[in-house]
Length: 74
Image (cartoon, rainbow, N blue to C red; front, side):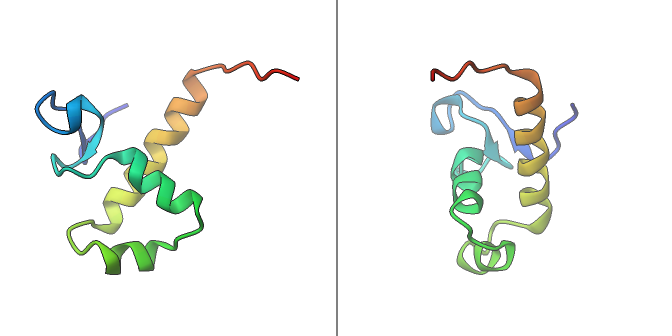
């Protein structure tokens, strides 16, 4: 998977995947989406985030979900 908008730098957010080198972790963006924030409200609240950042974060999450198997206890 080629990522153009998600970067990993050990000097930024302890190496967590971030949006374009900003100190804005992908997990934070995905958390906002998971809590039912709309793309529009996120873009308004965080003007340095772009629509393409959100799209790539979702693609990245889908890729990770496809690659990893997690066992759930009953």
